[in-house]
Image (cartoon, rainbow, N blue to C red; front, side):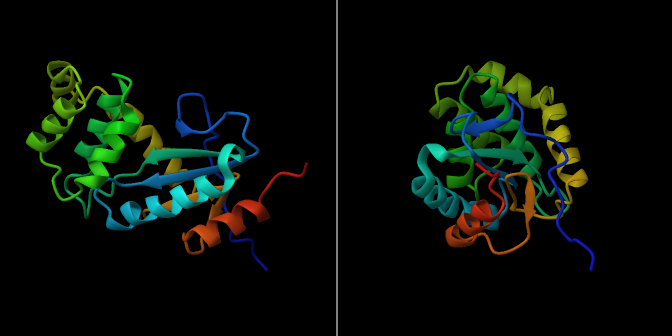
Length: 180
């Protein structure tokens, strides 16, 4: 019988967008798309998992814009990365998902202004695609890891192909936990 599981091709690194301690024993990696309604819905489940596991969990978010079906996904990912350049990735991340139906360039600039970012720098980063290589690296790693859609989760380095409700993610994290 063939093993259908696939490991995360790109190990978690210091430059990943992460919440939780680098020493946490459990790691949840999520590939997502800012324009994907399923990714948006999955965030409540991730929050429930984080609340349940507390400091035992490290959550990583990686970009996987599905540009063929979501015309604003790439520019939204670039906006998140531009905000990261000013130390505000997670705040922009939250705004992008909260305003998922409003991802035009003017909306992104408004979000940057709401966050108090240097909007000139933000606009230069967007127009110059200065953060595109980071997104492309996330996508490449996702493709090499077998990501075909969003959201896709990896629990402790193993692709999770089941449902992504909190109970299922908690069970997968437990099943793939490293031995103590």
